[in-house]
Length: 315
Image 1: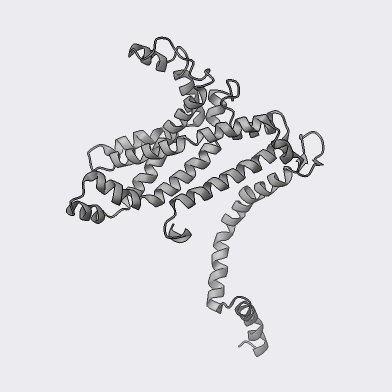
Image 2 (image 1 turned 90 degrees about the vertical axis):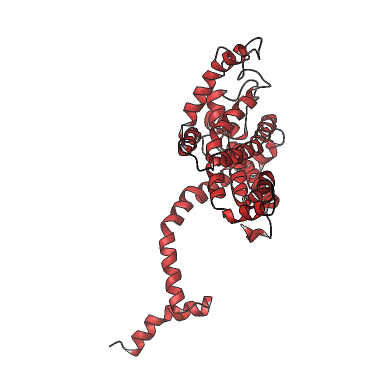
């Protein structure tokens, strides 16, 4: 039998928790158990997400080239950013890349609606559209670089159809190179966002659409006033993810153009890579990364402001 003093010693953590947080003994145990299950995930999140963010932010205050010891410069890098013309070039190109987002969302919604029908073999079409998503970006970039060469398949097909008089250097033309890379990004991401919208469409109860049809609504009116509003959570998710991906675009630029011609495809992420790992100016690259992170957070907040309905807790 436990002594009164021993029982009191065992109960003191529960009493202390109740005093501190207003939790019962049972609720206290449930909370501890939940945090024990979350522990490994929180550890990984802290190691691979929060620590790099904190380290990169601190690094932006130093001059560091791997060879020499770090030298504290304070906010000097952020002052230099205003006078860096390559930053403004990269920022302008990354902003233009955001044009992919609305086009990609509209096409993905249309594609999801097209494959959301109970037809024989429709799963094959869904898998075919999703295939580019699981293909390596390096492979996709090399394939499209070959297709878009002056003597490539695209020029050959357009000339055969009578749409071109002479071949175009799609990736070598200063006014076309960025749009060619944007097209490849759109082509590769289409299947990914189609799956998000397909899941959203299949989560909508058919009773809503049946009720609208019974009231005399046309197919377009049902889609515009019933299906599309119910798809808002999926639109918010997909548009936020695609906007962040557009600002972080790197692989296709690196593989297809290397930032050229004449810096016309020089994006923010490519500039960070160039400064950090090719010029070994890691402190300045970290400052660029901080600016990019702030832009990404601002854009994500803007997405929520546009699509929210009924307050922030709606989603």
